[in-house]
Image 1 (spheres, rainbow, N blue to C red):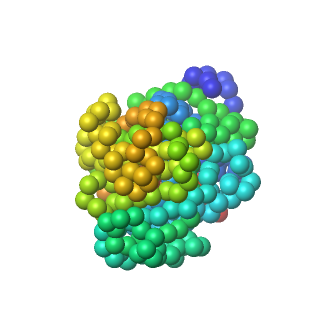
Image 2: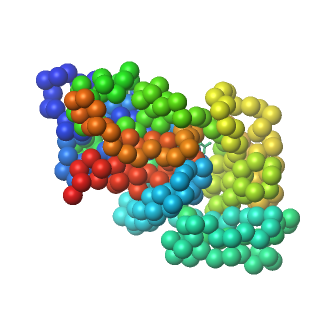
Image 3: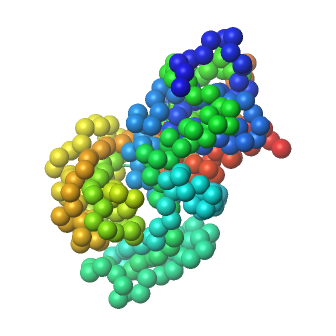
Amino acid sequence: MAARPSAQSTAPEVLVLGGGVAGLTAALCLLRAGKRVRVAARAYVAGTTSAVAAAFWYPYRAYPEAMVAPWARVSYARFAELTRSAPEAGVLRRETVEVFPHEAPPPAWASDLPDFEFVPAADLPPGYGAGHRFTSFVIETSVYLPWLMRQVEAAGGELTVHAYASLDEAVGDCPLVVDCTGLGARELVPDPSMYAVRGQIVRVRNPGISRVWIDEHSGSGITYVVPRSHDVVLGGTADEREEDTTPDPALTPRIIARCARLEPALAGAEVLSVAVGLRPARPTVRLEAETRAGGRVVHNYGHGGAGVTLSWGCAEAAAHLLFPT
Ligand SMILES: Cc1cc2nc3c(=O)[nH]c(=O)nc-3n(C[C@H](O)[C@H](O)[C@H](O)COP(=O)(O)OP(=O)(O)OC[C@H]3O[C@@H](n4cnc5c(N)ncnc54)[C@H](O)[C@@H]3O)c2cc1C
């Protein structure tokens, strides 16, 4: 990975800002469409929100729902494909159960899934009144983000480390820009409608479970259990406009207790780490083209709690906005 390259190196056709899941996926789509692409990011992998994400396919806190469902559908298909074609990418197919205190209508995206069904009351954990079952995908970000980076480089893309101070600076370097800066867009664009939704997760050793659980409606905070190959990500919290990235030790046992209600085996699981990420939230995802003096910028940010879920759908839409066919 290079620092910002000199002006003598081969000029890219497109400059992608951001090295999280949004930027890397957008870069890959553009490269596959035959474009010369440079990615510039302040940080990759560990320095991104994407690395903290739980990160399973589930449309959460991203709007408007009418747009989110088709983007999520595209990603669902791409992740399904990756489980077959690229087992090394870190995408796992998982049975997923969402539970509710009372009967709940199916979500808008239910009809897009091949196997969405209602769970019989007898199969629910104690205290729950309804449930939905479907196949989802868990994306192991510690495997998947480096895999995306390797794919970008293998397709001829350049990964560079540079923090842009403004979009004008970026357009000055390359007239076609895709802006995937997540929460960074707040200062870069600038976009004052961006705000953080703080989320704390606890990583525990996997006691032998493989089912994803979600409970968003019990009133005790968003709860999710996301089993990966060797560990389980337990969540969580969703605190709007809170930006302290230091884990709160008082929250950890409460998160574990909520998750153990869904999977009792988690009660005594060994804690491996605790992390906090800031979801890049916005009233609506910003996926649109903007003409600026000297160039064109396609914005692709503000995916809230669903940036992984929307990554392929939004990346393909962003590439199409830049190069309509
Ligand atoms: C606890 C938690 C759990 C989550 N769980 C899920 C989940 O299960 N499923 C799901 O779909 N989503 C989940 N999310 C949401 C998901 O993590 C985000 O929506 C997604 O990571 C956003 O990706 P991004 O690439 O837009 O942003 P980021 O990953 O933050 O990447 C932004 C990139 O832009 C770069 N950048 C910023 N400003 C500049 C600048 N000025 N110049 C150059 N580079 C810049 C950064 O360095 C970084 O590389 C979760 C989030 C949290 C916090």
